[in-house]
Image (cartoon, rainbow, N blue to C red; front, side, top):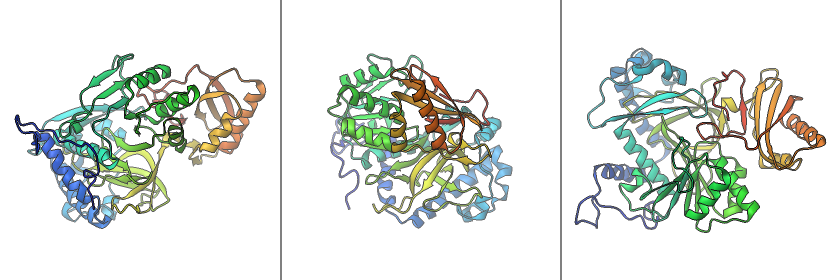
Length: 475
């Protein structure tokens, strides 16, 4: 069987030693990344039970370290017993309480290790609010960053990207960063890839840039690959179709951060003839799942993280079941996150016909804050299919939409429209909402020139404000 690296064109190694070009000798970080990648090439084909056995061994090392050096876990992990015999599918493990964002906020420095093992390197701090509006501080080790790099490059290799190409990124939302018209240009695809392979440039643009300017910038840069949020990709594809614009070199769109809808895959193919490759990551927890090279579902990155998908009783979900996602990154000893409830829900998939033993997620469904609450307190997933949206757009000249449930009895539909709606159109839209969501909700229409993104640059088409403070991160 050929390795992923063997079938990827133009993956030219770079050497850190003057006078030595081939075979290349990378720097220390690049060498460590390649060593992990070499193992990942093998482990992806292991049977699932063998992957889980090695996961349990690494989990034992993490639990021993956390119990010994992290104040927060001394009591929480006291009842685990011998970590060497810990079964991550057993009752003892499932009996451990989940770690919440509130726990992380309240614990502060008590979640940090007092002694980082030799070889794990320096630590760095990141802050993330995601789409929850509850910011947390996470401490990451330098070694954990090497694992991040390895999974980044695995994704490139899985999806056979040509490292010579130009990678365009529309993802930064920070004020004053990557500004139009030039954006920012770097000479490689970032530290993860650039430390081991010769790559083309990365060009970056701030995600808050108006849509027309985003498209003008993309046409000028004419990239081979586009990395952005699904919402941005969808809007750009719509704009391209409407105005007959093309991106002639575009081979793939890589999507991050938001829930990917099937309609977004369809419209990107229609606009540019390019497929979407989605990934499931968290800044505080790393790579959770990557899209399969041969299918549109996701493979858990089990070499780096233990992912549990649990039902309402805390039991593992089987194929076809949706449950909450609980993760344990296996290599960040600086600030262990043990059984971290990341706030997402996902559907478990059946074993993949591609032959990889890495477990499957069929889809990432959303967050609890994306659930519709019925007046009698039942929670439902308000999944919007392509046909649903097509029916809505057929009622009125709608350019953008967002549903915000304010109370159990009321939903605000935020709209950006091409022209003012008539009273009949407004009535039809309200009926559509009531029929789609299965109840005669009070539906208020609110009009925007353009519905804004959240401060994080993310966008969600359905948001519930029920049970959330008004400081929540809602676009």
